[in-house]
Each structure stands twice: as C-alpha cells, then as structure tokens.
Length: 227
Image: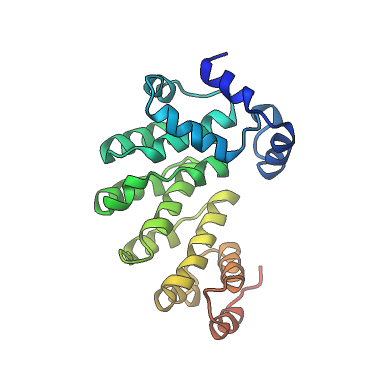
C-alpha cells in the first residue's frame, strides 16, 4: 500500500462508502474506500504542495475511486493552464464514473476560455463516455454566462450517444442554458435539435429550475415529445 492509500484508509468511513456505492452503480463497491469529499479536498491541497504530487499524478490507473477523486481535485488546483490541460488530457481516459468526471474542474480554465475551446471541441468527439461528458460539462460551466458561445451550444446539441451519462449531461446543459440563455436555447428545443430522450429530460430539468419563469415552464411543457 502506498503512503497515499494508507492515508486514505486512515480516513475511511464505511457507511459513507456504502452510500457512495449506491450513487455510483457503474463501479463495484470494492472500488470505494469511503473518504468524505471535504477530507479529500483538504488532502488534495496538501498533496498539491508536496513532493509526492508528480509521482501520484503519473501513476495511472489508480486502484480506488477515492484516489481518482483525489487526482481530480489536485488537477483542479493547478494554476498553470498548460499543465492543467496536460494533466486533464492524461487523466480523462481513466475516468470511469460520473462523480469524478463532474468534480474535476480546473479553476485556471476560467481565465483561458479561448485556449480551452479547441480542447473541448476535441473531447466532444471522443469515443470515451466520460471524456464527452466532461466536455459538455465544461461548456456548461464556462460558456453560458459572459462568454456565451452559441457555436459550442450547437456542438453540444449535435452530440448523439447511447450512453446515459452523456445524454444526461447534455440534458443538464440545455436545462441550464434555458435558465441562462433562454431566447437562444429554446430554439434548439423548438427545432428538435436533440434526440427525444434528451429533449424531454432537458425540459423536465428546466421546469424543475427556479431560474426559469412560470410562463417559460408552461411553454416548454407544450414542447414535450412522445417517445
């Protein structure tokens, strides 16, 4: 057992492990140690400043979910854009669940949206489920506010997959877009730009949002499709 694994097991919470395993059914319970997220984030800050950091990031694949979470949190703390991109690209093929995918969010990306965009476009056409999910998540996080980018919205709408966790993220993206960029996003719903399941799920999520007006929710309800 490595020093890092030993530290993780010292912070194991069995009840939390069992809870996590139910939320992430795509991986076996033996993959989880059961370290709570605040503990992992705190440890990531220590690891990011330690001599063990580079060795840990370079040793892939990891043996445990908690190691992958720690890995994602360390990358998220990286302050240099080029390093963050390189480490993200190296790690993406090893992500095997929605939680690790969604909790990796390098803060430095916010300051380099123009440089980030080509990488997102490449990730969107990956054959790897969680690489595509990550790409859509990055569009949602970085390109729906001041730097709204309809070109990336079009690319998100064009994603077609039989993978639940990809389609769910596309639906989540469009539900968020309907809250933040309604006039543009609603056209994609009106024009049937999404597959039926994702279309209906996006409407459902938007109608659950407090950021979408009652009038908008009522109209969106008329756009639902039959499967």
